[in-house]
Length: 278
Image 1 (tube, helix red, strand yellow):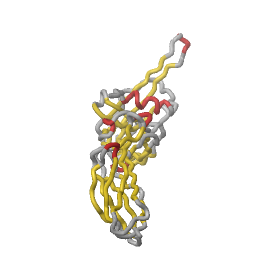
Image 2: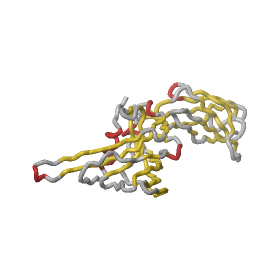
Image 3: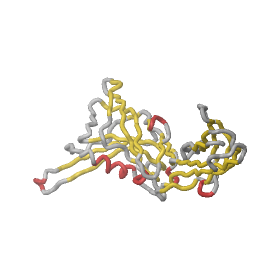
Image 4: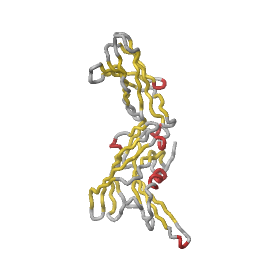
């Protein structure tokens, strides 16, 4: 299990902003937050190599005189699972300045609504099956204070951060793949047609796809000229995720396997295999 402090997870990204230094380290900012919404509330489906970038929206309220300028300080979003103080894993948000709009003001406060991006790179952040779960969202404030006056033969730099957790959730799921192959082709009307395939899913531990055994997949058929598929039968995946069943060949048409998904693994439908029946 990979233990990681959120501060360490986001420090690399925020360092890319090139934070300049105010004269002194400020106290923790008086910020309050609305809910953080990640990927419009939909699961984030991740394979073994490609990074997935999703939208993030949030709102926060700050004192009128307090500014987040992304020069001396910055505000970002991170995902974590486990405890806030000692997460089992964490994913840093974008280091770029978000797009924010003022939505409300009072004599002492300003409320802003912001949008940004969050990128999940499986090779950087996902390392075990336990990562396929519901994560929590956190807001992360970062600032730098520096004394670069060396006239007294002393310089100093202080890095400060504040993190507000449990502001939203995001579900991460493994990407699944499905295949189908009907034989023999062409088929003889009234004879058995064998429809094989395989159901696999991303294994973040190995960086490869592995068979998903013991899962229900539905064989579907669409006759030539039809506009929709109909369910034929349900099969259970075997060793290495193998799918196999037999049907009576009756007419020209396409076969495919559909997997409805699980909590940890996204739904998938195979490409179609068209069979000519003689």
